[in-house]
Amino acid sequence: MRILRFILISLMLYAFSQVRGQTYYTKNGTIKLFSETPLEKIDPINKKAVCVMNIAKGTLGCSVLIKGFKFRNALMQTHFNENYMESGKHPKAHFKAKAIDLSQIDIEVDGKYQVPLNGILIVRGIEKPIDIEASFDIRDGKIHGSTSFVVSPADFDIQIPGIVKDKIAKEILVSVEAQYEPYEK
Picture (tube, rainbow, N blue to C red):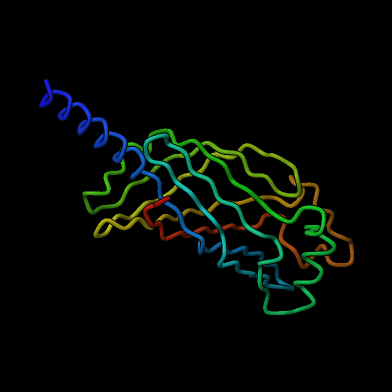
């Protein structure tokens, strides 16, 4: 009877460790924005995105401080934060997604995995559904995730003044990269 109890407890502990071990995160995800018109190229970068992925649940989320975006031009950064993103009122942007099938990722097997994600992008407090494809590259048990998608400032009620409307693209390319590590409590 003791042997059976030991086996059952061992199996339960193993199963729990497998589920817990399927959560990965980063505090240093990179998010790049890109807008180009004949008059202006705008390409801020934020290297402090926090992203969490739970393979067992098929969930993924990222959060980024708006003021963390760095521009080549300080005036652009000020306008971005104060006039367009209103980062004082809306300090963060979020992405929450449910993978159609995140279980296909096997961290024990090196390879590339393409995973469709259904999610919600929250910018300036406005939620928009977004469907994207993410790429996960597994090498030596490490997960590198990346994706890119296009958003429109108008979708998030970002008002572009007429004087600069020709300097900001109507669609902004968003690129995300994250090197995930196992989450340990």
